[in-house]
Image (spheres, rainbow, N blue to C red):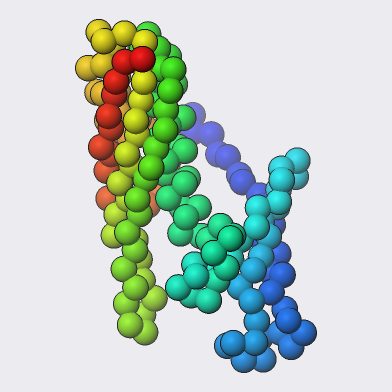
Length: 156
């Protein structure tokens, strides 16, 4: 039987400079993302869209979500398969195309996980498990653009 999960949070705009949205240049794009029991996440739009570079933007958070989901499934699958991972980092890259007057969309995200396993005999299986993790990732299954992965697996 399928289970349903609900994710609730709040997004609070903090960018009113005193005149609200009286003009396109009159307000900041700053906001805060909150959920019970979690630290506040400072957000803004991408600096290309008048945002602040020292705050997380929605595009970065989408790419981070894809990377996190893949990693968490991957680690689960490795544990089940007896592949001992001792290190995992990712430097994902998302590409978004902005269209004149029509918004834009992501055209792809490439995950670039770098994994360390304890034994050379685990490298092949560790590499294969990225494909399985990709197929299980809730976030990757939910987006309408390609999510690819280019893993590197090495021994400690």
